[in-house]
Image 1: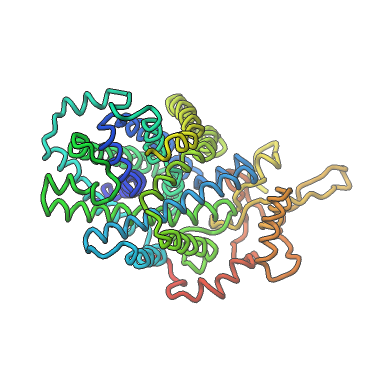
Image 2: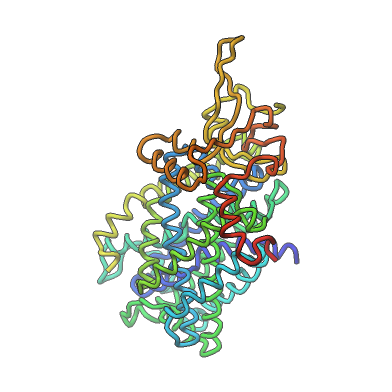
Amino acid sequence: MKRVFAVTLGILTAIGGFVDIGDLVANSETGARFGMRLAVVVVIGVIGICVYAEMCGRVAAISGRPVFDLVRERLGPKAALANLTGSYLVTLLTLAAEIGGVALAIQLASSVSYLLWVPVAAFAIWVALWRVKFETLERVFGLVGLALVVFVIALIQLQPDWAALAGDATQLSPPDGEDWGTYGFYAVSLFAAAMTPYEVFFFSSGGVEEGWTAKDLLTSRMNVFVGFPLGGVLSLAIMGCAAVVYQPLGVQVDTLAQTALPVGIALGKIGLVVVILGFFAATFGAALETGLSSGYTVAQYFGWQWGKRVAPRQATRFHTVVIISVLLGVALLLTTIDPIQLTEYSLVFSAVVLPLTYLPILVVANDRAYLDDKVNGPLANTLGIIYLVIIVVVAVAAIPLMILTGVGQ
Amino acid sequence: MTDQPDPLRIDFHLLDRQIVDAAGEPVGKVDDVELTLNPATGRLQVTALLSGQQVLGERIGGRLGGLLAGIARRLHPVEHPPPLRIDLTHVASIGSAVTLTVHRDALPTPPLERWLGDQFIGKIPGAGHAGQ
């Protein structure tokens, strides 16, 4: 049982990181518009996050240093401050979107407007961050988030033409009616969604919270290589469901209810209940991750005490940052901005700040003063460098593509 | 000091490293170092680590650093707060973090941490307990 629970950090990170409000929407949007033609980006993203999460899990286990410590040490205080500003704002946008996602999930179940649920959801999220033990959060939301496996079952139940779906996935070009600009824009969004910086902030800090040592390297790797591919499979299933149901009809997806509908078609009411539960757990889990990450980044930049191992009284600056971030997220949502649009913007800005986070991880993963004989091998370095190049290209392309396509319209 | 890289480079091994206490709990960053002229050798020596947002702001310099130092000053009850100064004799080892020989309780609590504890976080129910 201990072994099973050992991977819950990875599952929570993956459910929250991969299948949060952004991915629920981005995957079904792209499925409806492009079929499976962007599926390859999800696969590339999964491999990328595995490569880098493995590195920072290893650094956290051997040296006890989370990602933002490395960012400050390797980039120096100035560039790290620029990264902190960018990463914090992106994490804040994502946090707001996740709180919105929780509220939208409750709206689906209750038919009461999500705006009324926003303060309630935010308060529940804060209470969890304030009072509940890290391991408990991880287990509850990691395991309940598994309800999203219902998308895989729904896809099978829809009895799609598997050969056609697979054939579609090998077509690396936009379908009729779409141009290269929107294809590129959604590719950037999907890639950024897979490699969102808060995933590595959360994963490495979570490892430190759990007190990982060299003995836990196996746990860390299991988390990475089970959790993230699982998130990838769920993402692909969501994309597949939308491709099967919406693409033939030419329907565009822009609400969470539409993301859920294919499951309802395939599995009826029970399916809908399970999928709404899954939405709730995934967005709530992601809200916890982004809420903690907002505090982690600031506290780790300045060297403050952080985390949930100690009482809030012992880490007052960390908890203050978390509270302010949740309140700012609520304020942003109560302007009645569409949470789904908010997510789309947060993905684009994530893409821009990616290199400043991933470069220091790669550098430190080669430093013997941190890792002794556990430094990167040739495989990790080759993949690390290939992905760094991809990350830089994506970062440069993100804003021009956003402007060129009018945010993918 | 028992364990440190040789040669020790201030910019590479000291500046911006995390300082942790004897139990491994975070104390602050090495935001700057104190250099003292050793009259015997005529060379500068590191004699203490300095930590705090204000010294950090001053080290970064420019408008950005000025802003950071200014905010730190505003959040401080004293007009010209001294940085947290940790004498090099209290440093146990320098590795991926700078580890001290003392416990963090023996060091002065940063004023902002203390103020938030007294006026805000400490007043919320459950502040004294780690998660359940």
